[in-house]
Amino acid sequence: MERVNKPLLDKLFDRGVFNDYGLPTDFKNNAPKNEVQTFVLSPEVALSAEMLVRSKSFKMPTLDELHMPYPYTAIEYPMTEEIRKLRHNGTVNGTVEISRIGAYIQEVREGMFSCLPYWELVDGRMQHSIVMFLFGTDWPTTLKISLSVNVNGDGAVDANLMPCQSLIMASQEAKVPPEHLWQILQTPEARQHIREAATEIPCLMFASYPLLSCKSGVGRTKVPARVPPKGMKLGGRKQKAYSASSYTLLHLEEIETVASDGSISRRSDISAHYVRGHFKQRKSGVYWWNSFVRGNGEPRKREAYLVKDYGAH
Image (cartoon, rainbow, N blue to C red; front, side, top):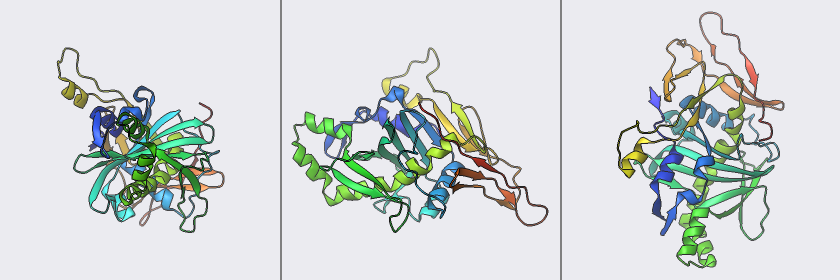
């Protein structure tokens, strides 16, 4: 049984002021905490999303086709052993393993987004990208990268880079000249950091978003906010540790069952010859392909479900 005790985004907000990148930064300057809607992918949905982004049928949607369910959306999922094997790594700088990853995505307007990846390491440390990835903009004075799931670069999406808001505000308070801040982003260490953050975006932003609107096959459980019981007196640090914001947990209905507190269990009635279901992308949309039985007996009938996009906010 697995359980998401607390969204990683909550833990970044709780951390308060932290000496990231040599400056006292505060994550709350990056996102409006009370307005962000968080979606957490179960281990099976996360693995399916990682498989989808690596499939030959996957094509990153254009920015006009991309629609987040809310203006401020966070998507998170665990870095399971299966995902590590699929990635052949799951580390930062090849040394420290990641336990969870996420991205805060703001839909500024139709076709314009900002994305801030963040992650948790197995030793409990948390980090977020030092830059915001801006999609649907064209600022010639900023750094620019192209993201693609294809080696040849087909279907690439361009993104401008700018320091994240918490880093900008920290540098202003410390009276760091803007040109010096840009010099920091040009260092080999910063460029490696940016590359690592950028590699998470195709799955977190472009492959996971259609799963948020999948009407069949993917279940949604709204996990309520956790607050200390009435009358319990806790200090500030313990109260933060106990409390957690509400979030929506996405899980595969035929494989996983979920309790109201977010506990995830694998179903016990799955055949020994179970073949994993998976997402497929077609010209008409993204589909969930149900699992089936291979081997003795009749295989289960395959079913596919169309993933519908969310409408306007």
